[in-house]
Image (spheres, rainbow, N blue to C red):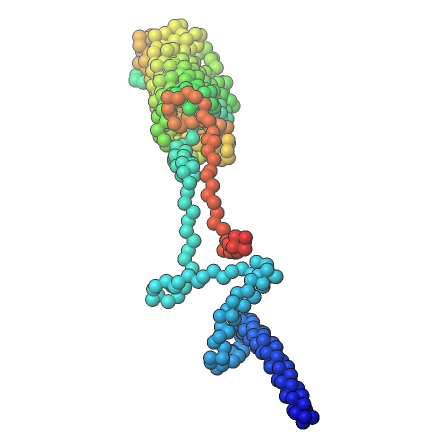
Length: 429
């Protein structure tokens, strides 16, 4: 009986020990599986970091850990991929978006020209806006049109050469000898003024006034009897002028009244020369030619309708001494070249020829007539003020207005760094 009870106790104890052992094995199996999974996850994270870390220049590439693991790592590949993505997300949260994303490389050009294909293409010219094109054309048109002056006022020095010759029969037989002067100094002033050109661009801007005045000094005349007598000479002119601009060629027409006096002091002898004081109306066509905007040539010719060659005592029409029925006409030719030295200061030089033909008509001395010639060479400085729009020659009398166009602006392209930053910011948001 005792043996039976002992055998039952041993059996119960053995059964209890087997149950504890099986429970311990059941608890140990999940722990081993979690430990193996943790080890596998740690190895996968290490591999991912190694792949992202660029090897140092010249260093050999390390072999991938457990690359020959074969089928042992196959069950954990999907878990490793998911853990990599989660790790990258965590790194993005920790480090932010400071790392710029790499832009995909553009595909190479399909050409066989080698270095030519690798060289960067030249930057393209920025296309002009409509306003810039209009302003460019307007500036080109304004540069082609030569500027027309509104005011020209000059002061210069002149040298006068004069010759008086009586026609046949010889004037000496009548007690009238020839006369010559070479040269006689003069000071001269000249003016050309277009008032409307300061604020108008129409017809009125090309209508102006002209004037000139010359005065001789320091000249004495030696007569046939060796007497030295005082000699005076002067002239002036005033009138209106119309110009018609055609780009660099500007024809003009002027109408003016003028006087020219040349007098030699009288000795009350037969050898005295009559005083000449011409009064005339001058009708003159001319032209201005622009070689450049600062170099100008003026040419002109004129007919002089002489109203009176000189009346009064000791003049050519003195009835007691000379030719009371004398008449005359004349012409002149002018040419001058002007240089613009600064914005409003210029220099001008020129030469003039003027000649009168005198007809004595019926007279007691028997002298038919005379030819009176004047040649002047001169140079000086002048003030030149340009007008507004006078070169256009249009019919519009409104003042010229400055352009108020604004240049259109185009958006400048962003740099690559700025575009990458903006792309990364938008993706992070």
